[in-house]
Amino acid sequence: MSPTISSVSVLGAGVLGSQIAFQAAIKGFPVTVYDIDDDALTTARSRFDKLAATYVKSVAGVDADATKAALDRLTPTTDLAAAAQSDLVIEAVPEILDLKRETYEKLGKLAPTKTIFASNSSTLLPSDLKGFTGRPDRFLHLHFANMIWLHNTAEVMGSPDTDPKVYAEVVEFAKAIGMVPIELHKEKAGYVLNSLLVPFLRAGMELVAGGYADPGDVDETWRVGTGAPAGPCQIWDVVGMRTGYNIMAAGTDEEKQLAAWLKKNYIDKGKLGLESGEGFYKYT
Ligand code: NAD
Image (cartoon, rainbow, N blue to C red):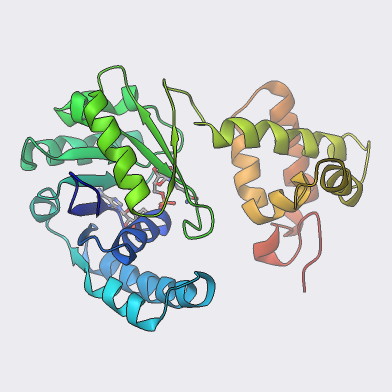
């Protein structure tokens, strides 16, 4: 348990929200899971069952009893007022500014003053959202990675208004749920991980798109030259070509050209990466 945070809510039980909720529950926290309607909560329950099976298979020291106890600590609800009562509310609703604004405006009115709000947003900055919360000093970002049980970074990023004590409490909470906290000293689009990863992945794609080298040779260079387990084209296949397209299409003119190349040569041919069985590589 974290010294000051003993109850958690997660808003939005989608891909990331369900993982955050389950991870906190497996570490002993009671977690209220809020989503918009009963259908969304039914989907969330099946996500939790799949996560339970994955944890038993993939996480050392976690057995069926532990996942059963974790499932029992999750309380799904469509009542935002109930979710607002926890010490920490982690928001993982879709990456749409208006939706996040609406959520924080409602939440700010329902939550007691002690409650800390944290957003899992990948692309927005705390300063984009703090004005909607009614408590900029008790608001910051806590950004998790997909497949949280394997990639257990938690990037902590405040705005200039975030109270340093609140920041420190959230860092402690991240540790308490088994994360490696990555502390950012100021706001940065992409946090630390994507600030490193996106330019690296783009460089790999540029080498292939420009005809300089094949994906296998680009990746082998990186693996042999640095000892890293995977090269950029292997990582693109896991991330998926559609995400690659969206990132590149929102970038500079050169990146837009890369997006067009990716669409013509991969996406339009159904080569979406690992999920479709073929991307830069073929999978059986
Ligand atoms: P998702 O679409 O899988 O899930 C979103 C969930 O929010 C759904 O269950 C949906 O029903 C629910 N929802 C919709 N409107 C809502 C509302 N008004 N209130 C509460 N819940 C609502 O999305 P995701 O991929 O889990 O992304 C959620 C957040 O996490 C985004 O901010 C995204 O940037 C961030 N994130 C995603 C990833 C990723 O790999 N998917 C990684 C890191 C961070």
